[in-house]
Length: 353
Image 1 (cartoon, rainbow, N blue to C red):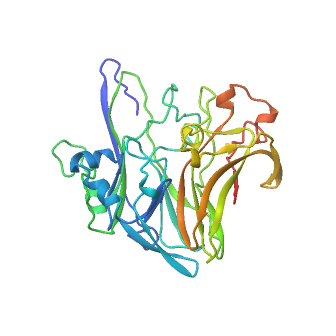
Image 2: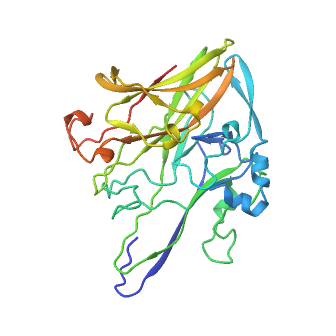
C-alpha cells in the first residue's frame, strides 16, 4: 500500500477474513506450533490471547485449560486435555507463525495452512520479515479463529457490526469455523509504501508410524527468504511426537540433524528454556544423507523423558531455525546448500528418536 499523496499522511488497516471450508468439511479442527487440536465448537481463539483474558477476567484461559478432545491413537484412543500442551501458552503476547486445519486424518486428508504474516512475495521477492529492514512485510496485530458468521461480517468502520472482530471471552457455539488476520490501522507517510500479506493454501503433512513411536515435522513452506540487508527469515516448525503402540518409551530423546549452515533461532530452545527441555548441540558434526545428497549436520538433542503407550500427538513448540549467514554476515561455499544464488535453499532438518 503506497501513499501517493506527497503532502498528507494516510491511515490504512487490513482485515483478512476467510471461511475455513476444506473440500466438503466446514468444521475442520485447527492446530499449530504449541497448540493442541481444537474446534470452534470448543473455543474461539484469538492471538495474542491476553486480549480475550483482558475482556473476560481470565475466563478464556480457564476454558482453554479445560477443553478436551478424544483422538484415535493406533489401535486405541486417548483424551487430550487443554488447548496448549501442559497448559503452557506461548502466545499470550504474540501471534503464531502459522496454524493449519485438516478435513480428516491419514494420507487422504486435505490440509489448509494459514500464515498470518506472508512467507514471501512473487511480486516483491526481496521483502524481509525483519521489521527493521527498509522493505518488510508488516507483522499482523491479531489472528483469530472462531464462528465464521461473525468473522464474515467484520466491519472496519467504527460502530459497524463486529468492529475489528476479536474473541472477548470463553465463546464457542458452532463448528462452522473461519479465521481472520488483522493489521491495525497504520500511518503511511507521504510517498511511503508498506507491505501486507497472508500466505494461505494447501499443505502436505507428515504421516504417523502406524505401530510405534513417531515424529511429525509439519510446515511445508520452509523456503528461506533473503531481504535487502542480506538477512534471512527464520522458519518455524510444528514438531509433534507420539506413540501408536502399547509399549511405552523410557528416557526418550529427540535428535535433530541440522545442516551446519543453520542455527536454532529461538532462545527457549537453548539458554532460556527449562533445563530439562533444552536442545543441546553435540560438538562434532556428522554426515547425513538428505534429499539425495550428503550433508554435514550438527546433532541437537532434546530430552523427552517417558513417552506413554498410545501417546497422542504432542507439540514441541519452540522449533525455530535460522540461516547462519544472518549470524556471520558472510557467505562462502561451506555455508550454503543451495546450488546457486538463483535457487533458494530450504531448511530440511531430519528428526529421530
